[in-house]
Structures are given as structure tokens and as C-alpha cells.
Length: 276
Image (cartoon, rainbow, N blue to C red; front, side, top):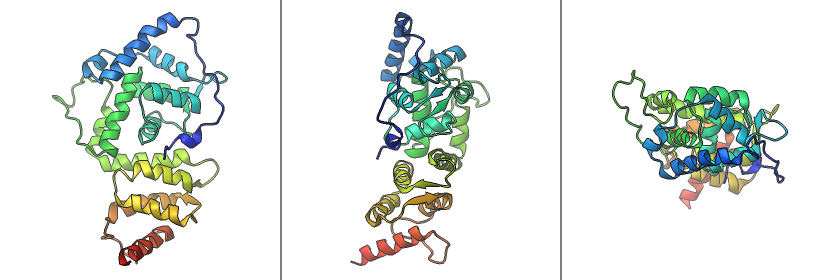
């Protein structure tokens, strides 16, 4: 289930653009971005140095026409499509996390400016690599990238500043917890303390299912029961702890532990299916 599909309204706004009358200047840059995205070649990416003016211009390419300080859902979708960041997995969540989004599928100019300055990113190919690196590390659980030379020496040939990435690689469990906690806050509408179960299931399907096989069964149970309407912060946090503690054979489950009712009911459901 695409995480961000429920965020997009049926109508499409016109996006703000400063380049409608100056298309000729933008085309070479877009062609270079397309070549870099297609090649995923570090050599191609390394020549794209961070430029704050280019970072701002990139933001304006996707900003709303009626609010140039905001990239709304339509602009966010276009940004992801152009940067080849999939919308039906965790990558759009990772992008939102790295760019300090406060609402689902929305990015503010201030947050963008600060985040791109930290990441040293001012092009779509660089954004793509940022997200792919973190997705590989935290969701696909691939081995961390290898640092070249002294880690205290600035690596000028990197496609972006990997300072954050290296900190995530040192403690990937903590980093995943940060992404997981961020995702609940991002999806939770104000002033509610909960997210609806449909949204929770969509998020769990891209954050937990790829990492913890038992979560697929939990989602099947939730769907079959169809009685759980929302997830509060306690259930959200305990779901991750449950996945980290209990294996697919329910080893690690303790009925005396204070698990949420949903998870106790799931264990009963799974045991009954195993018995039959």
C-alpha cells in the first residue's frame, strides 16, 4: 500500500516556477540531472557540488504557485518522481525525515534550506543518493558503505555530505528508531493523539514488513479483524518492540508482559491458526 497515496487531493495545483519564460537555461541542467540519475555513477555525481542558490532554485521548481514557501503534496509527488524516489515504499518517508518535514508530503522552504545545507545537496541526483543510501542501510539492512581513508578527513569526492549517514551506520538500530518515531509524528494530524489504522498499516507495511517477517502476519490479522480503528503512540512504539522481541514462531513472547491488547489478540489468533 503506497504510504503517501492518501495524502494527495484529487485536484492538482499549478506549481510555482521562475523558469517558464527561461526554459532554455533550465533544460541543460535538467538533462544533466537525468543523465546522473540514469547512470547512478559516483563520478557523475561527484562533480555536482553543493550550491545554496541551486538548492533554493530546486525548491522553487516544486513550490506551490499560491505559496512559494511550501512544497505541497502535488509538488512533493513531482519531486519524488523526478528524483526517482519511489512513493510506494519507505523512501518518501526517508526523504521527509532528512528534509525535516512537519506534515505528510509537505516541505517548507526554511526546513529545506537548513537540511540541504547540512547534507550539501542541491540537485535531484544528490537527493536520490541520500535516500537510497539510508534506505539500503535501515530498510534493506545492507552492509554500510565503506569509508575511504581517515574518517576525520573531508571526503571531497562524495556526492553529498555523509556525516549523518556515518552516524546512522555506527548505530543503525538507533537510527531506525528515529525514523520510526518520526513517521508517527509526521502522519499524526493535529491535535489528534492517534493515527487512523489505515495509515498505520500503510506505514508498518513499508517500515516493519521488510525488516521483520512477523509483521506481515500482524497486518493480516489487523485486516481480518477490521475492528481496530486507530493507533496511539503507545501501540506504535510497542509494535516495534514486539517485532524486535518476538520471532515468527512466537519465541520471545511473554503473556505476562504488558503488551497492547491488539498484540495479545494477535498471538491468540496465530496460535489458533497453528493449532488448526
